[in-house]
Length: 388
Image (cartoon, rainbow, N blue to C red):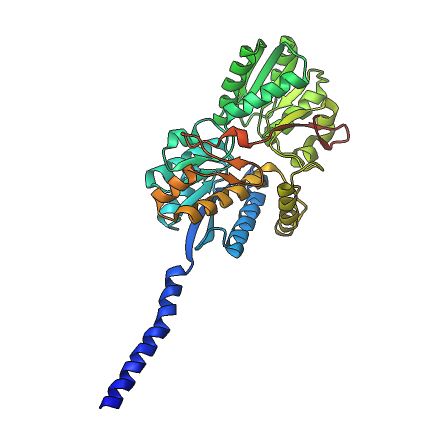
C-alpha cells in the first residue's frame, strides 16, 4: 500500500510538473486580432485601393513574423467601400457585426470615411482613418476614431506657403469638386490666400461627374487670374488638364494632391508636361528618399507587381496604409485589444513610421509636424520631378 501511494504521489507530482509549462505557454500564447480594412477595391478609385491592400498585407506579414504586436497576431479582413458613403457604411457594419473585427482602418474618399467612422464610433470600435484628409473626421466622430494623415487645413497651410515661395502671383482662381474633400479645400485655401493678401477672382465648385470643362475654362480666361489652384479627383483632373491644354491656356496650374502620380502621367503626361503642372505630394520616389522609404519601396514594389500583374511605383497612399497597420500593431503591443485600452494607446502613439512620425492631438488628428510635404512637377516628357 505504501509503495502504491508513493507511486501515485510521484505520478501526480510528475503530471503536475509536466502541466506547468503547458499552463505557462497558454498564458503567453498568441491571440488573433481581427482588423477590418475598408478600401475602394472596385470602381473609379480601385487604382488606389488595390495596391493599398497589398501594402496592408505586407505590414501584417511583417507584424506577425517579427512579433511587432506583442502577443497578438493580425488577421486582416478586407471590405470594398468603393469610395462611396453608403457602400462604406454597409461595409463597416458587416465588418463589425458579422466579421467581428476589433479595430478598423479606412476608407479612402473623405465622405466614405465619415460614413464608416460613424459606424465605428457607434459600435465603440477603434478606427484609423489613414488617407482621408477632410477636416475634423476624427474630431466629429468621437473618441474611438483617429485620423493619421494631415487634414486639409494643415495641408493647405503648407501648400499656400510653398505656392508663395515658388510662384509670383497676386490673384488666383479656385476650382474644386462639389464634395466634402473639395469644399473643405475651397474654404481653407481661400481663407489662407486672402489672409496673405491674394485676391480670389474666381471660385467655382464643379459636380464630380461633369466631363465638359470648357465653360469653366472660359470663365477662367475672363477672370484672368495669375494662377489656378484646383482640387479635383483623378478622372476629372485628366479631363480638365486635356481641355485646359487644348484651350492653349497659359495661366500656371496648381493641383492639390489627389491626381495620383504615375497613373495620372499615363493619362495626361504630355498635356500636363506642356503646362508644367505642379501639385502637392507627401512622397515621390527619388534618390533623396529616407532609408525607411527605400526599404519600404524595395519590399513593396515587387509584391505589388506580382499581385497586380503590372509594375506599380510607390505613392504615399500605399505607405499610409502600411503605416496604419503598424500603428495598430504598436498600440496592441502597448495596451492590448480591449477597445478602450486600444483607443487610449492610439491616443498616446509616438511612432516613427515610413512616411511620418505619428502623434495625435487632443482631437485625435495626427500632428502635422511629423510630415514632410513637397511640390512635384510634370516634366515636358511626361515624367515627374520634385520642385526645388
